[in-house]
Length: 492
Image (tube, rainbow, N blue to C red; front, side, top):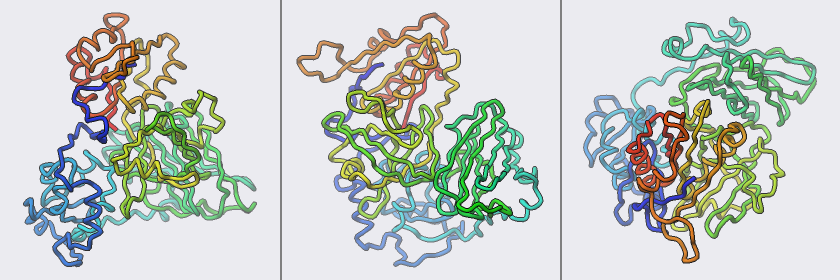
């Protein structure tokens, strides 16, 4: 593993920011930071030009507002005047202008769909598109007709029916004290990481990740259940069983009433982020500016972040919800390498560097034990299948880019016995007592360490760090004849 900063790194005290999907940040003018934008939205200034009115916007009207000083953009049916935001946008004015006078939902999702734009742009809201919103399908009558929760073929999107996985289904059973919801995925690579369950009040939500899609069970339960439940996966047949405990030992006539998008199979790129509030249990100093945070999931949540994926943490800061992506790490990073005493399926650990001039991490660092942080469902395109028949694994990490490597390294050393561990540390600005290697990422440095055991051995190179390090590293790896399929860069 290499820890090698790039020559183009930000200064030591600057906030290193991560771009998404190769998106570049642009230098912002003095007084145009995120905090400055929040202050502007709280100032009472009219940012829409409509003096507080909300209007219905036709497509013809939207098209007229396509200039820098008069720029309206539609996102998910709502129209925003983003002209006041131009100079505050980290991606630059040109990126916003790509969607000027049009529906920018698809472009927004490609670049940064995790951003809480409703909160960021709420003072810029012009109104809603003058189009009738899509009416949610009422599944009540359908569920009376359909046996065991199977979706009628007429409701399966054509693209999913032709190209996607076999359509899943669900069923439910009960005893005097228990209710079991069974999900039949028809896939054999399903495990506990594939299922996310949240039960709040009478709302039951189960997301099952099936290839690049998400199968959603979303029901308002007909009776009350206890907070704790169990989840079991039968991998050989792709079956998931969620066992709920009844509060009263009575017979249920029906499971419940369908809620939004119930019994639907949706491409993951089209789904929004779902959050649940997690409690801060502990915070330990790892270095002078790095902390190991431990968050506890709600007792009514089952969530395990797959290897190589990340989640988003959300905090309200000066009245605006700010979101940042982080990769969970193993609880074994606790001080003195002591064995974690907390079960991994109920706690999530994050190794986070605190940027004292930043906006998000200082607020995170100020949280007290017992405070809450909103945590999203997992995201990421890393697949565990990349390890199949692997012969060489190289991990390149700079700074907190080490975090996604923790679980990858643990999995590789546990499940791939043929791999040998060799660690190299390279510092760009070492102290005088440092006797190891020093320098920046370079062809010579990578050539020294990244050597295949065989000429045609199956290899995987994972790289993560600040954007300049990652981008430069990918270019150098390709120059060294590593193919795109052999390189996985983490950009969140």
